[in-house]
Image (cartoon, rainbow, N blue to C red; front, side, top):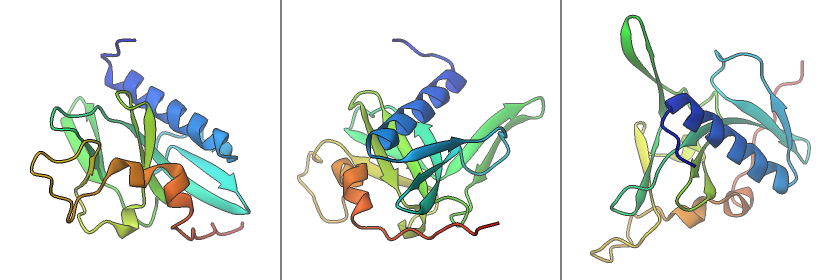
Length: 153
């Protein structure tokens, strides 16, 4: 499948993350608004998670860049806005080359702009400070994160 349109790639990223979370026992709640800071809500074990999903391709250097911002274009040009880390529980990324979804807790990131996930080992074999993508699969992050419950209305 060849996707050229940014919107189509974004839609595919959301669907792949929803599928991945459903396979892990989450119930998915979609929204009717494009003006929320998250794409959908997932529910499991009496906890709600606000999910922002992205589609990102593997770079030639063997890494995936996870930006902590959204961008859009309109008649006034191209715009970017950084996510408020308190509005999202996970920024998730679907990568078509690995056919995997990666889950990043933005509140644990020390860099507000982007997180680099390595799919392949660095050529210089460095491991200190390297974030390996497989450490961000849903099975891995579920066991390491205690999620806050959303406020009941």
